[in-house]
Image: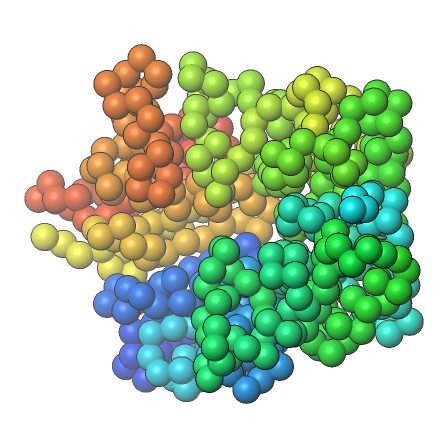
Length: 133
Length: 133
Length: 133
Length: 133
């Protein structure tokens, strides 16, 4: 299994910031390692302050359950099978913007969490991060 | 009233792990005593990290209200009589996977919480634990 | 680097429980993986309830700083260079009973935390766990 | 008053990482803005996991009281005038490694927090960050 290095994390975050610049939406980008520990965090200075926590929480959620946060959200709604899972693990985020990072062998080696725009915009930036792998 | 011993807890957890092996889903299994205190916890090393907390929280929820977590969940939805109960007690889990452990006299002596698969799979493993009583 | 498996964790915990039986002190034994996530927990049913948290917190402290908790405690006293470090990371424990688990190549792959007796007794049981590696 | 920009924060963190490379000690480096909100965080992948929190907490402490964390620590010991201040603000760190960032007019515009080595090493890396201003 590949370990997520600082170099890779920085490259992903930089790609995300550039995509956010092109979108002209100030963003927060967090990257965690396979154990859920913060590896890299960066943001535009005028990004929403409440999104600093959201970005990190999305990355945490994506690594803890090895799935995109939006996928978790599809089954955690009031009529879903895991309604209320957000109360666990010190607080999860179950809307878009968190994506697992997978190595070439298919192992989940970390996750990225993006917050600052709409959930759709956050997902787009998170995908831009992964495209830089 | 019977007290849940380490021997019984270990037997229940081992039965659960074996059932999870047969199901080929890595699982987390937590057992709490009548006071809600963790007595035994074990997991497959590749189980979902987010389920470590969920398993313990399910066991806690089941002992705190002396009912299966899925039963609590049926009345805690937005249109139910105890909507939002998950906010109490430091965070509850109200979907399947937590079951009270009852002695031969009908006393609730502890609870088991399982997490790692779908809620249905978690319930099946929790039942496998109780079958080893 | 070796990964701490459930089999190894169970063997270590069992060795610790047996040593605690010989000592006739009921003990709590927690084992965490390299990322600090709980892998195995077990205790004598009459162990001190307050030690359930202490055992887990000692294991967490030992992996977070890759040193025995007693070593950390030697430098975190009022006249030491890192006085007050216990306030970080959601609460650390800086007296004896937490030991890192190292593989044959010298990598820290997890940690064990023991609580239930005096700090000296806890350290003795933690060492008994490691002796079963 | 100057605002701490992402460019400046990145420059400071990069300078700190290079100094840590020269010291051959893996480090965690956190930078917060004038409001104490995380602006940038980065670390060597093999840095101590417990220092992720410490680095952020040192930066937070330095901005909250507009002084180096080591200065705060000199007056927060058991015989000092503000003994126990670490309990406030969700947990402070009062040993070396956190430094305020001051602009050319003398305004405190943010803070840097470094953790990973001894307190003296952490201070040295924090000073290397500030030297890149």
